[in-house]
Amino acid sequence: QVQVTQSGAEVKKPGDSVKVSCKISGQNTYSYGISWVRQAPGQGLEWMGWISARRGDTKYAEKFQGRVTVTADPSAGTGFLEMRGLTSDDTATYFCMRDTPVQIVPLRDFLVGPWGQGTRLTVSS
Amino acid sequence: EIVLTQSPATLSLSPGERATLSCRASQSVDIDLAWFQQKPGQAPRLLIYEASKRAPAIPARFSGSGSGTDFTLTISSLEPADFVIYYCQQRNEWPFTFGPGTKVDLK
Image (cartoon, rainbow over all chains, first blue to last red; front, top):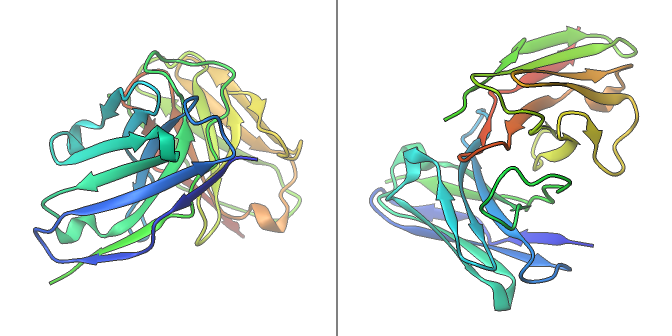
């Protein structure tokens, strides 16, 4: 059974950077990708980016291009989300989820998920 | 990027009633649309993928339909645990995008 576990809550100041981790266990290390999704308090889901663990291919939402970097260490079954130049608008819960392993989409007959439990990020001076 | 619109924003119903949630895409996404359910304080979970396929362990009262730009999630008979928020996501092209969500609440 695949399990997804994220790192703990973070409190940062404006201008800081943050790096969140996402460990996927119970899965062939190379046959997955990881998507990152955030949710501001009381708001909807916002897709941020994706990485293929096997090839390291990445995709980003235009809004986050250049400020967010997603990486992966397949040997550790772990993905990372790094975000720089934090502002109060980045206060949100950040989720990772197991996602398509390949860059070519659509990928049919693929069950996205499970999701991690979420990492709460608070940005405040 | 593909923009998804969900309607209504809030659906007020009673247990046992039928819920019909809509998701519309700004351009065709073929059948590459998923539905997620999110309960308060929890991560979302997959209900439906490829527009109409139920994910494992999802009750049969949940069904999805549609293709191209118009999609529907139907809950045939609402149970108390179903009064939460539902999101659609297109997975046809990058960037994957979510709709704004529909909240199903108690009338």
